[in-house]
Amino acid sequence: MKIVKSRFAFVSGRTLVLVLMLCGLAVCEHQDHAHWTYTGEAGPESWGDLSADFQACKMGKNQSPINITGAKTTNLDPLELDYQDTPYEVANNGHSIQVNLQDAGKLTIGDDSYQLLQFHFHNPSEEAVDGERYPLVAHFVHKSASGDLAVVALFFVAGQENSQLKPVFSNMPGKEKEAFEGDGQINPSSILGSDLSYYAYNGSLTTPPCSEGVRWIVLKKPTELSIAQLSAFKELYSGNARPLQPLNSRIILKSR
Ligand SMILES: [Zn+2]
Image (cartoon, rainbow, N blue to C red; front, side, top):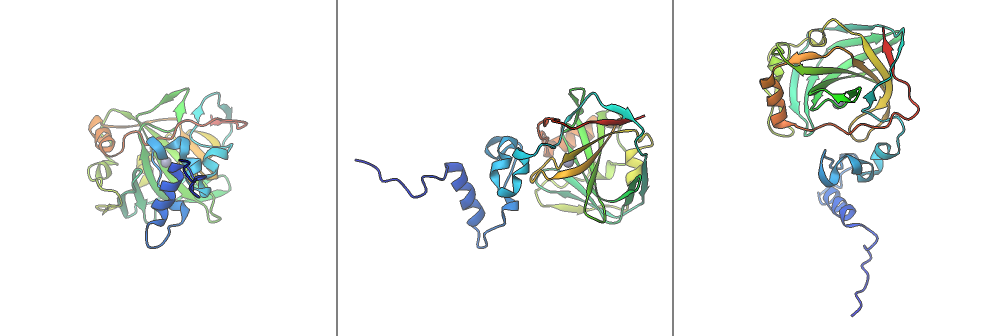
C-alpha cells in the first residue's frame, strides 16, 4: 500500500520538533528564544538553522571566537578604565554564570566610550592564543550610548585563589534562571589588574544570535584562580565554549 505523503513531509523531523516546542506554549515565543546548547542537536554546528534570527552564526564572515596568532604590533589606544564599586547580582542564565552590574562605570578607548554591563565565564576559554586555550575566560560586556558592543576578555590560569572573585565563585546559583544578590559591592578594575596590553580584532557575539560588529579586546596577561574555584564553575558549566571560527580577511592587532 502506498503511504500518502504528509503535508508536513517537507519539514525535517528536527525542525518540526523545534516549531512544536516554540509554539506549544499558550503564546508562540519569538524565535530569539530558540533553544540552543553547546552539544548535540542544538549545538554550535546547528545554531544558524535554529532560528531565522541566528543566520549570522552560519553566514557571518566576522565570527568569534578566533585563534589569536600572527597579530600585528601597532600603537593601539590604551584602555582607560573608569570603573567604580557597584552592587551586583550573580545569575545562572542557562549558558553560563553571569555577574550583572548595576552601575560599574565605563571603558574609554580613544574617542569611544562604553558602559560596563556584565561579565560572565567560559570553560575552556573561547579564544585561543597560538592554538592554545586557557582553562577559563571572563568576558566583560560593554555597550556605547549608540549601542555598539565592546567585550574585554580576561584569561585565567590555575594558581592562587582569586580573592576579587571569591564572592562570585563561592556563591553561584545552581539552577537555571536563578540569581543571587551580591554581598556588598564589586569593583571590576581590581579583577582586570594593571597590565592592560591587549589584542584587538572585530568579531561577533559568541552565542546566538552571533551578531557581528563587536569590538574585541583580549588582554594578553592572564590572571589566576584556584583549582577549587575553577572546579566550582565547571560543576555548573563545563565546555560552554563555541568552536574557533575562521579569521577570513580580518587582521588581528596587538598593543606594544
Ligand atoms: Zn562570552
